[in-house]
Image (cartoon, rainbow, N blue to C red; front, top):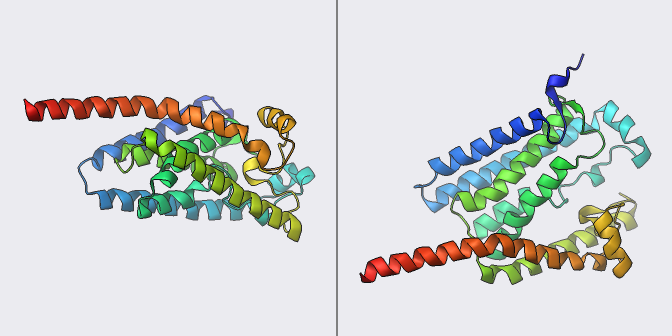
Amino acid sequence: MQTDFWVMRPFNAVFFSSFAVFLFLLGTASILLRKKRERTKDIVLITACIITLIGFVLYKYSLSRDSEYNIITANMGGFNWWGELPLHLCNINMILIPIAVWKKNRPLSCFCFFLGPLGALMALVMPGNGFDGYSLFLPRMLGYYGTHFMIVIEGLALVTFGIFRPKLRDLPRAILAALLITFAVFCINLLLRWSGLHPKANYFYSVETEGNVLLELFYKWIPVPFLYLMPSTVILGVYMLIITLPLELIDRRKEKKEQEAKNG
């Protein structure tokens, strides 16, 4: 019989305790890697993403065999592999972070740092049907929360490991990267719908709003799939600016002090 002690809900004790464990792992790894070579840091983060991706596949397999989950989601068609691809705003970062790190791609790194943790955190505080109010030790709960907590810390690790630090000059290209990635995912949605493989494909919410209040407002302004997401780029730009500007000021002050010490 399930006890309430291990039940996972957003913002309950189990949620915060689990989050604290993953943040502790991030802090510990960041300290241990502080003086390591850049390539070592890259390998650690890429390996973490690969392990998370493997765990994601195993989690989805267990979900396909979960009879309770299929009953819960019966009105949405039940489990469909084409609807469980790593193409949501959060889990696409398991693929993009290794590419960004290996290729030293700053716009992509910027995208992953800002949108990876944000997307995963949104999924954690607003879990879908079947992932709220159940024991953490159910395979689908371990998979769902473990994957999303890992994506949060992997996105943050880009900065805490010292691999990447956003600059103001990165923001325009990062927004462009976000638009291109969103459009690519939108095209995948159209292909899945057209082929019949997943008639309701809606990764990145690029085809339908699915009742999201903010997206419903955007759709009233621009009633066209994909294009109705354009106002969100303004919010994205402000969000990036709020985080990047203090980091930029800190870096400039540090550089100024180092230059003064050098000249002094």
